[in-house]
Length: 110
Image (cartoon, rainbow, N blue to C red; front, side, top):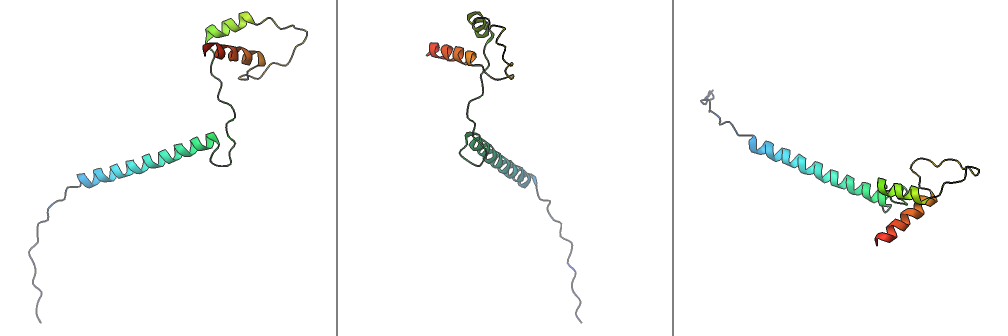
């Protein structure tokens, strides 16, 4: 029988893995950015009420009143009579008087 000839060991070149690793990291980054953009778009569409079953936002978030405007509102508003005491409004709610004053301020700036 014929014996198999043994080949001499071939010295292999070490491959450089820096380019494939960089491409892999870049690919993962692109995928994460793409998914993040889709998630943010979905959240915005939910917020507006175009997409999905969640209720739409009916009114914009109240803007904080600068202290100077708040002082003017306090000077203009007469003191409410103590005999008709109404329950205090919940924090963050705008009373009708405050809403009227804010509307007047916005109209004056136009």
